[in-house]
Image (cartoon, rainbow, N blue to C red; front, side, top):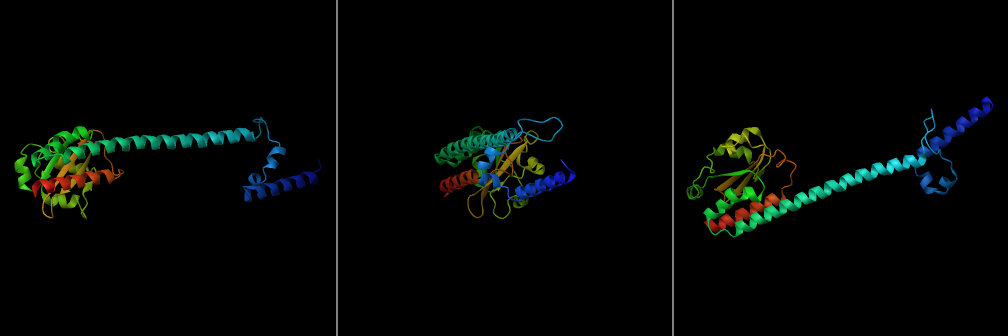
Length: 230
């Protein structure tokens, strides 16, 4: 092949390459060309050429692995959500059936750690009736100025997991608590209860958690306690 022929062929190859780069769907739109084109059967020694079928196979495998991973994560999340729903619904049913304030508080503080698969629950209330009814070491004394900083803009859930909150809301066991959630149950405009739910598992509670089920549980508690007090 003469130099001029080589140059001409090289220029044509570059033009074709440029065309295919600009028209990435060309072979898809003209599939008959794939039947007549010749592809290398495997790697060629010293050349940067790869079998088209091998390339496609690897690409499909990579996509399949990615999809499998996504599906697996969805199934795991679905199972986790299903378990969480069961726990919330079981706890809610027990709360709805409580016949007294004392029983309501007992279910939250003593039974819910098992129902929620957590390690401990403490309570605080600015309503003296509640603290007098349920006198025990799991009822905390907290400066309400602190609570105003924690539950801002009428929020009822705090998942911040700030270390400085541990000695306040888990006074006797804060050294073993690795993650926690704070819930505010409104009784009326003036009175409320705070439940601090703690776990030894650092992954149990996080800011990434969705709040629908937790809000549902809070509404159940608010509804029940208002009915028991008033």
